[in-house]
Image 1 (cartoon, helix red, strand yellow):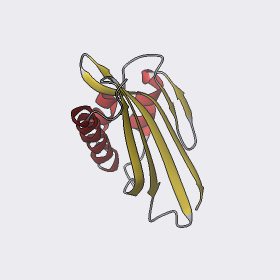
Image 2: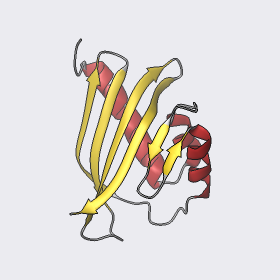
Image 3: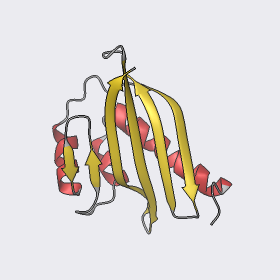
Image 4: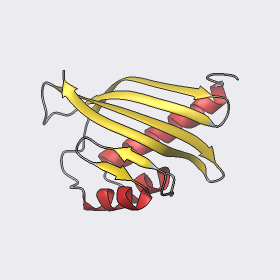
Length: 126
């Protein structure tokens, strides 16, 4: 298996940037489109455990658009073959000094494009 095929990694990096822009801009439609619409898709958030796209969709639609801006650091995107990738990043928000967020995503290439099938967000002292 090839790791980090340049053109595949570029595709996932573009999808990741699209996700980040949608997140900080509260573009719910794009956020929903970038997650696999399946009951097995999971998102563990900083304060919620979401099982299935219906739960993820409900969370996104109810979330406040305030305070979403953040600065990323130490982002690592690794691809495995042509259809699987993981994206890991740290983030900081101005409204939570002394805290660092951690985000991990598993991306899979599906017929409709790259989609997140599992995600985890947590915040620690930092």
